[in-house]
Picture 1 (spheres, helix red, strand yellow):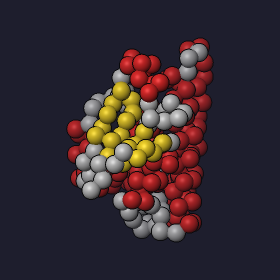
Picture 2 (cartoon, helix red, strand yellow):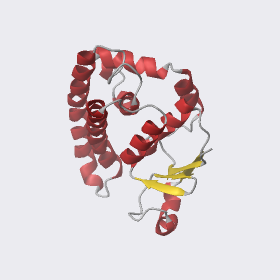
Picture 3 (tube, rainbow, N blue to C red):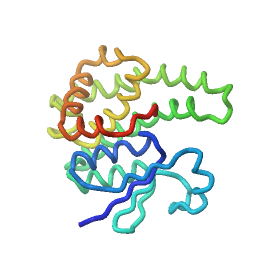
Picture 4 (cartoon, rainbow, N blue to C red):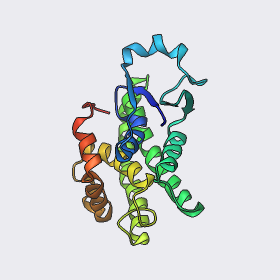
Length: 204
């Protein structure tokens, strides 16, 4: 049995997709959440040479970098692609969503507050572009999912992004019917619904 500990800030952010995977796999783990005010004191001793979060520990072994952790956990619990092309498609979705959310992160946390509004405008402009790319991919796949014929990491990465996109515009998915249906299917998976109901409520 693997003992897991996931360390991240007290938000969804870059750790939420991994939390989805834990929920779907029914795996217990320690969900350590660090308050922003406590981070400066904890940062020097964090188990990451780059002094960044998230960190996943599995039986004491340390894993770093959010997308690498997502890929590792997806492969571990049967949520990755079955071949190299599917793995590429999953990575492409993840990179697209991450590039878009990076604008939101800058809008929320750029030390230069005068730039935050411009970052947010760039984020709002990029969201429909990103969704159009993924919608086209979904339609070409002719399945209930983005990649292959099963739920994969790509669907979870999209779902995580859409939670944020819908915060900004509750109708954002109306022009992307395939993704809207996919979001609803994933939301209705019992393990996902249970997790979303019990997780701490945070802005990001």
